[in-house]
Structure formats: structure tokens, C-alpha cells
Amino acid sequence: MNKLTLKTEGDTHIVITRHFDAPPEAVYRAHTDARLVQQWVLGPEGWTMPVCINDPRPGGRIRYEWKHPSKGGFYLTGEFVELKPYSKIVHVERMHLPDPTPDNHVETRFEPEGTGTLMTMRMTLPDAQTRAAMLATGMERGMEASYVRLESMIGDFTASRAS
Amino acid sequence: MLVISNLNTSFAALADPTRRAILARLALGEATVNELAQPFEMTQPAISQHLRVLEEAGLITQRVDGARRPRRLATAGIDAMDQWLAMLRKALERNYNRLDQVLAAMESNGRSRTKKIQERKTR
Image (tube, rainbow over all chains, first blue to last red; front, top):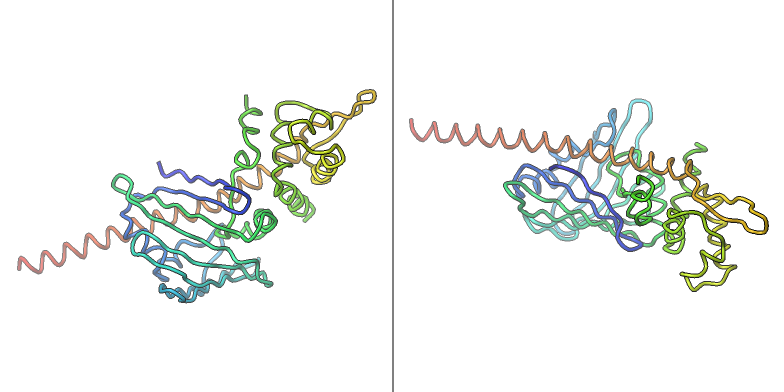
């Protein structure tokens, strides 16, 4: 029921959906309240987020810094574009590794689904090459912006292989 | 590091829709350049160029069959990408599983707060 879906759309989009057993207001708050964001946007085990700045208003700044005891650290900056409580967040983000990655434009929507919430996150990268590069780098950090299901990239390939 | 740089090449190779279509076609079975060129309305050299990219990315291989050079999927390369994506997916799932816990804690905090307010009111 809480299954994550990840797929690519066209050449530059990545779409992620996930159901949560909580109302849209709570899921929205968990995405915009820095004290809450700091508790879950951590990726693989061992990473922490010592700095979590999040100013949820149009033009407001985002800065997340991650640290790992042996793997060092990196950070993300971004800006909020549009906020519609409790249904929609639009923001732009980039990773600093330490050179900044191209901007990732992210639209996150929350809609009631049963007694919970369906989240749909739609990412738009500047071009197909950027999306491909994002799939291959930076992703071990978890919340970095690109995930995909292989089968959606190459059609029914996985299905035909499995049969 | 070598594995990572191969993956980089693999994902870059997949950024092109024609190359994705070629892989989807090869998933049905091996095919020659001519057979691959047909549905794409592309010249043979153009298809050959795409095949070179896919081969360098470790996603396809060719074998010699007389004058024919049929291409097929390279299972190892595809599996490496598959495993990588599964790992990324797992990292994202970890985040959202943690969010489930954060949401559950928010809900129980909210409940106990409401309860306290109600208790105060009844006093």
C-alpha cells in the first residue's frame, strides 16, 4: 500500500509517487518544517543532517548539509517558488559536490487518498544528459533527485526477460 | 570506481530515445544492423553509431555469424544497472519509511495534545 513508484517521463522528467497513512496537512508539514525534514531526509544509514535551513515562502531559501563519519559531507541549496498549503510545493534545488549540479525543478503534490495522502513528486531536469548523469552520480546519498525504474526506460524489456 | 564510471556511460547511453528503442527491440532477441535500422527509418551508419555507443557502455555485444554480426543484450551490463537502481530505490525507500515514523509521531503528539486540552476544559 505504501509502495514507492519511480518512473521516467519524456526525456527530462522523473516522477515519484508514494502513499502515506497521514492526512495531506501532516505530510506537507513534514516537507516544509525544517525540524521535521531534518529527521527523515537522510538517505542511507550513517548520514545525518546537521544543517537544515528551510524558509517555506516564495523565494525562501533551502540549505541542507549532510555529514557522514567516514564519507565526509556535501550540501544542497535551493529556493521555494510556490507553496499552496497543504497540496503543492514547487522548488528548485541543486547539489554541491562541490561543483553545483544543474538545477532540478521539483513540483510536489499532496492529495487525499483514502484516509491518507498520495504524494506525487515530478522533477524536471534541463536535458536528457543531465537526467542520465544524475542517475549515475550523487544518488548514493539517497534523497538526491533522480530515481528511475529500468523497465520504464527501455519499455517492456524487464518483463520480457522475466518471462 | 571502475564500476561507477561504467554505470555513468551506461546511463548516458540510455539518455537517447533511439538507443532505448534499440534495447527494447534486442530484448525480444538478437538482430543485425539492417534489421535494427528498419523500424527507425534511419540510415545504417546512424544505427551503427548508436550500436557503438551501446557496446562501449557494456549494454550490448555482437557475435560473428558468417557475414552477419548480430547484436544481443549484454546481461552483465544490464544487471549492473539494475542493481544500482535497486540500491537507489532502497535509499529513497529508507527516507520515506523514516517519514512514516515522523508522521506517526506527529499524529500521536497531536492526539495527546488534544487530549490534554480536552482534559483541561473538563476540569
